[in-house]
Image (cartoon, rainbow, N blue to C red; front, side, top):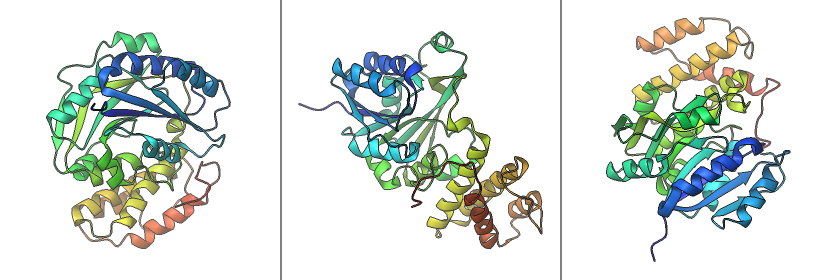
Amino acid sequence: MQQAPVSAVLTVFNKADVLESVLDRLRTDGGPLLREVVAVDDGSTDASRALLAGYAAGWPALRILHDGENRGPSARLNEGAAAARGEWLLLLDADGILRRGAFAGMYRLACAHALDALHARVKRVADLQAGEALGPFPVDPGLEVSERPLATLLERRGRVRMAWLVHRDCFQRAGGADPGIFVQDESLPLRLAGAARRIGLCEAAAVCEPKARFNLSADRRQQHHDRFLAHFRYLSAHPDLPASLRRGLIDRCLASAGRATESGLLPEQSGLPLRLRRLLLRLGLGLDTAEYLAKLASQLTQQPGIRRPEVSV
């Protein structure tokens, strides 16, 4: 008998207040498409693990991975994806609640358009009731299909939240999230787009997330740090990219460095101001940035108060 095609992968850290609602929606909406839910606990200190264990007792499709350590979302996402058995991976944060019909809707779109990966937006809402008030995932979610995924992603903003449906082969080609960066928000879209042949971006939200919760994605200093390093590390790992893509990645690095400087995470740099460097880059004046970006990366990796993997890869 053919197995259900989709494994949902959740990274869990102290999400006990919303976790049951997340699981309830997956259980009711997954239907015959859902093979399993792989929940990877990242050393939660609240009731998340107990809640997961209790839920799994009544739902064998829920698999729980935990080792008591706090290793970060990137490592846990990769761990969950490696354990998942589905042909497709639905990648979600454990405080992201699917809109009704989003599970089947995203799968339908991915198959109908022969996509390697599909992203839908995440809508921040006041509470779970406000999320329900959005209604079901629309039949026409404003889908954009691209056969130049990395270029398209670099041209777009706001594609870092976790609402991805990815074919396993694409995830494996990408290598998952960058294990050298603690949070996956910035590195995962970049690496998926680089590995995909055909990608879809939905304008409609498929996931609702309560605003009141604090998570690492809301920490601006962490965000600036991770955004810079995600693009810098990808650029360094792919020296043969076309010039247009390299310029796009460098521009993202410089923009992130500017925000990091404004927030006090980076010191003011000597020489050409960051804004002028970005302008010269966009004018195609061939400014050599490799040494400059490496210096910024070195400074960022030494700043205190930033979560990093214990071992940088």
